[in-house]
Image 1 (cartoon, rainbow, N blue to C red):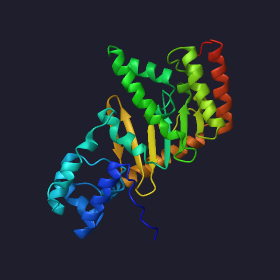
Image 2: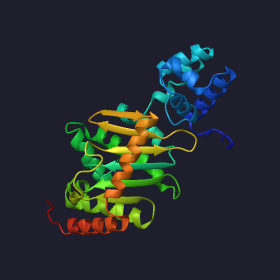
Image 3: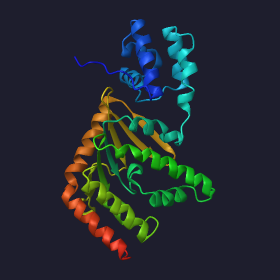
Image 4: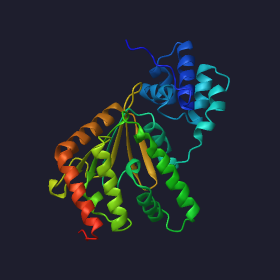
Length: 279
């Protein structure tokens, strides 16, 4: 049996999760038994205890009632509800920060963790065409801060499959795209990420309906995340996560090898540098 790791003292969710585990075990309940009256899985309770998921107030109140903790969790989960990210993405971003591996399929744009500042500005301006510059600046700052997690040379493992459309969609013009793709080339050369391109000529593939993100953790079950315009869903159902994991594996199999992908990225980046147009 592996030794349980102490909670990260810099992570409020992990500390609250450790208190939840202590209170649950004191009450003599398994994770599944605590989850049943909340209509959530035992895996979800495990993720709360590991700090990979945020405890929402509705759950905190019920947990206090079930475990007899006199409002402790309701009082302490309020600060965790504050986020610099949009509501539909906040929980996924927080889970991402504790993941040991992140695997992502991107259909139309460079994933947020891998965007340059100039690229992010163009994306957010497209999302919010009438927003004041200050709001755009705040959104970009949050995205750049989020991307700091890839500065660690060992964790998380980041494996990305980019649809070829990501390379061809000219976000912000040739100079912005040349920088964006050049940044990806640099990360690949530093062996910081594994990246594959799914070419147009691969034809139909396993994720035709949209983008996909998978996250793995040291002390909690894996999660998947799917999103649409202003919508996002973090999924812990084991069967669904297993299906999404298979989907990503099929995408990896259909994509170009990392070496071939690197060559394509370099070629397209050079074309952008020379101002050439792409279909």
